[in-house]
Length: 260
Ligand code: CO8
Image (cartoon, rainbow, N blue to C red):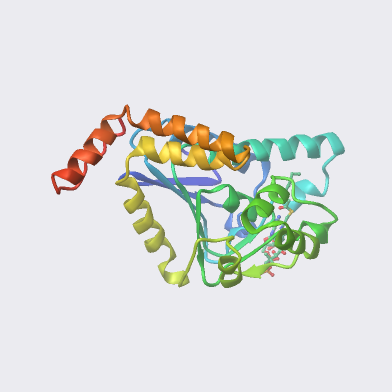
């Protein structure tokens, strides 16, 4: 796969996806969103890829939002379609069944913060700033930011961030649960790769079911979600990887998970 605005690199079982429009701080225009969609569809199907890292080109930004040049001329019906198309791409990322690590190397604003929230885990450089500044443009978040942010950090904090539009530091983002870890900017990619390598050793089917159980379960009543978890638990019991994991533990050796 070769795209204009999205770079894809492989490091063993990890795929590194870089949004590459540094001149506009990696703003997401329509072609970039479509390239992201095609990238994640391909990586989902690729059995060799167990973990994905998403980051932004350059040192300044992860993604500074949707491309404001496009927003400035949108029509009501076009705006709705644009929002739905972006939501579809971010749903695909959230539910691709493999861990996706956002390596937040700078500004993650608007659509950039929404992209990071669709990822499974978030590592932020200590220089990063995160926020939903749409209100300053007379807009609201449109890539599910009102929903994912309130689920991640709670309604009160989400309301404050979206209504004021004021970005927060990486440290504050970690404090409220918006990012998992904050690391020195110079170490961000090394730490993201190390985390990816650790996850890549885990049983792929179990990881897929964990992501599915958490993502679907939070939208269900508790008792129903527990039934769903139990069904997935039963399903992983049918895998070779479960036999390998338990046998390896009892034999005091490291497991070799094959994703079967
Ligand atoms: N879109 C287009 N261009 C952008 C964007 C953007 N989101 N962000 C930055 N740029 C461009 C600038 O215009 C500038 O271009 P040029 O060099 O031609 O003047 C270049 O990138 C560098 O930016 P700055 O000179 O502004 O850099 P600073 O370091 O001074 O400032 C900031 C950095 C604070 C990040 C600043 O660029 C900024 O405020 N950017 C906009 C942030 C923003 O408002 N993001 C939210 C956009 S709205 C959104 O994401 C909605 C998502 C849901 C859409 C739903 C579908 C309809």
